[in-house]
Structure formats: structure tokens, C-alpha cells
Image (tube, rainbow, N blue to C red; front, side, top):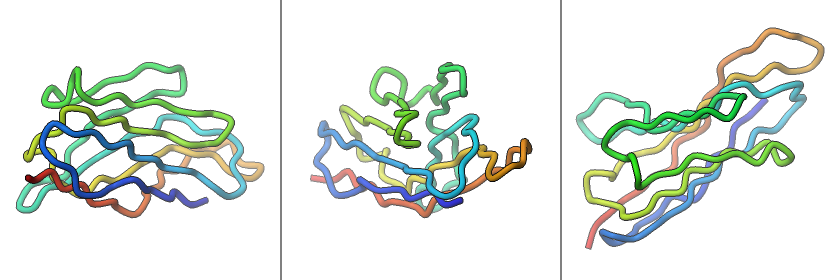
Amino acid sequence: VQLQASGGGLVQPGGSLRLSCKASGSIRRIGGMAWYRRAPGNERELVAARTSGGGTRYVDSVKDRFTISMDNAKNTVYLRMNSLKPEDTAVYYCNADISSGTSVAYYNYWGQGTQVTVSS
């Protein structure tokens, strides 16, 4: 199982980006998926999470600006980021709980990071 993140880049303050994270491999079922970020000098923080049942939660600093969603048919989770601020600059990582093959056990996987830079 692999998670492949994409969609990062350089954007001006107030702009938008959409991050994608596609899970591939012998996937049986995907549980929760989430996006984390790590800014230089900071600890990694949970930005947004989505349960398998569709429930979502966000860190306070991105509420009403970011939206996490999932396309189950494509095994892909998205993070739509609007009204971006310089303090959103970070490497963003996707994370997922996935059961694969014939196993019913869920394991936690990380994607590679994608850089988001918000600057004029």
C-alpha cells in the first residue's frame, strides 16, 4: 500500500490550492484519512481528518477555510485550501488507516510530503 500526495506549490496570500492523496495497492478498505502539516521549527500538527463514516474535524486555525473530502471510488482524499495565509506554509502529509489483502487489520500509512508555500 502506498499513499501518493500531490498538489502543493507556491501561492499568494488569499489564494487557493487543492491537495490530493491517492492510496494504491491491494486495498481492502480505507478507514480514516487525514492531513497533517509541519512548518519549519514547529511540531507536526493535525490539520483535518475524515472518518470512514464521513465525519470531519479541523484544527481551529483552518476552520471555514479548508475542506477535507474523499472520493471512495478513486481511493483519494482531498484538501481544498482557500484564503491561504503565510502561516499555512508547511509540508503537508496525508495519513490513512488501511486494511489490505485478506487482512481485516488496519495499519497506518503516511504519504510523502508536499510543500505548500504562501508568499507574495
